[in-house]
Amino acid sequence: MTESPGTKAANGEVCQRVRNGLKPERNGSVKSLHRSHEWPPQEKEEVHAASRHDRLYSRPFIESFEETPMLVAVLTYMGYGILTIFGYLRDFLRHWKIERCHIAREREEQQDFVPLYQDFENFYTRNLYMRIRDNWNRPICSVPGEKMDLMERVSHDFNWTFKYTGRVVPDVINLGSYNYLGFAENQGPCADAAAQITMTYGAGVASTRQEIGNLDRHEEMEKLVAKFLGLESAMAFGMGFATNSMNIPALVGKGCLILSDELNHASLVLGARLSGSTIRVFKHNNMQSLEKLLREAIVHGQPRTHRPWKKILIVVEGIYSMEGSIVRLPEVIALKKRYRAYLYLDEAHSIGALGPRGRGVVDYFGLDPRDVDVLMGTFTKSFGAAGGYIAGKRELIDYLRSHSHSAVYATSMSPPVVEQIITSMKCIMGEDGTTIGCDRVRQLAENTVYFRKRLREMGFIIYGNNDSPVIPMMLYMPAKIGAFGREMLKRNIGVVVVGFPATPIIESRARFCISAAHTRDMLNRALSVISEVGDLLQLKYSRQRIQPASARPLDDNMYDDVDD
Image 1 (cartoon, rainbow, N blue to C red):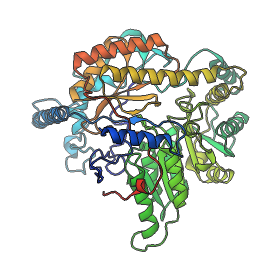
Image 2 (cartoon, helix red, strand yellow):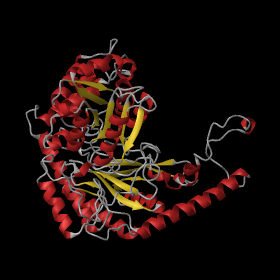
Image 3 (tube, one colour):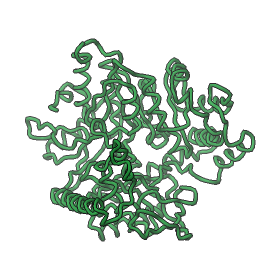
Image 4 (cartoon, one colour):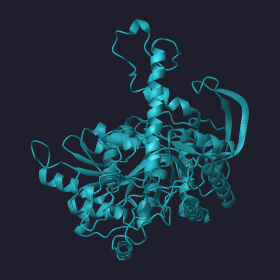
């Protein structure tokens, strides 16, 4: 239900977020491909007219990122400053054993050893995270569907340890799980099929795919995934994180260049680093920044030798899980073709959740999936299962079967998990003879638009694309991170709150994940509570009507060089 601040990598190179420094144009406006700004009336009309005649986009592409109010930013910095001062004071008291330190540290007899725990790196955990730790790692004791049951716990030592009371908090509306299509359920065709296959195959395989762990159900699942995506072949892996981190090193290496969006997930960051490739980062969803790096890579080649790069791999996500933004895939593909680079697309959050047929961001834009060289996704969200996949040309998949560490050394996927994937995917495709899958895809889209619209009308600052089921609501101040999560739970609403280092220090937020399983009554109840808590904590920061940053046309002016 909750996400720890450490789940997103605090990567100074790849995950650092650039919010300012946009290049002013001659007419005084700001050229930005991912942020909403105040435009003069004439310019607003020109932007919308351009989007209507844009040959790359077949539908409106509306994203908004309202600027942090200056007073809120100042107060947020002051809050972190005060917490930091008190943190150093408490560390001083702990050093002289005036206050007890509960966190892991070296024993006295090991003081001359090289430090195993970096005190400064743990400073945030000791003095800031511990204050609001009760908002994370809450145990649930039911299916994580549209509602869930929570195990109540208390702490008598300021969140250093917890004790369970034995009481269950029932029927908490779940706005935190990635259950986009509502397939996380313990009844219905998916659950029945998984239970039946367990009786036939058992719960585990106890071997790798290359040895004696390759079941006929694995083969059927991979063929179904390839058919679902409209590609030649596909390969499944037991863990979504490892699908990225273990396969990117198999695709690129020394002498290759990776161009990574600055907000890419930690699994993509780790995979890029493990590959040994050169990594360069472009601003989030900014096609000017991406093209500038592509031009420089083509012109200058590798450092020192200036030899051409062996491969140039562009790495992006379909939906960015902390921003709620959708990749500008038509423009990325256009640049990829223009400069003959390869494209790696992570559809972890977008597969099943976007597109009229639930086929992800490629389906959302009406593009040809064959234009994406490496199409990655996970089964953990829209399909209510576990694991991930990579799809593409048959030659690519055959290569990965023998070169990917995830394929060679990892244990095969559990049979009931495989059956959950097969059944839910057939449901989405309509191969089960019903319209349940199509109805859920449509319901998710309706719920997403409704929830976002209502939150904006209430005066909250909301990030992301209008069609993204990931909805970040800005909290900003550190004290409000914990307060919002606690107050919502008191009212039987389970939410995810996220702070630094998972987000920029002044952009703490609550992140809502909408599901097709949410009824309109549930959403209205949640919205009423959010509004009530928003008034209590003074979270309705929005002071202006957000002007959407519509898609820009692909022309020469759009890709002018930008200053770093």
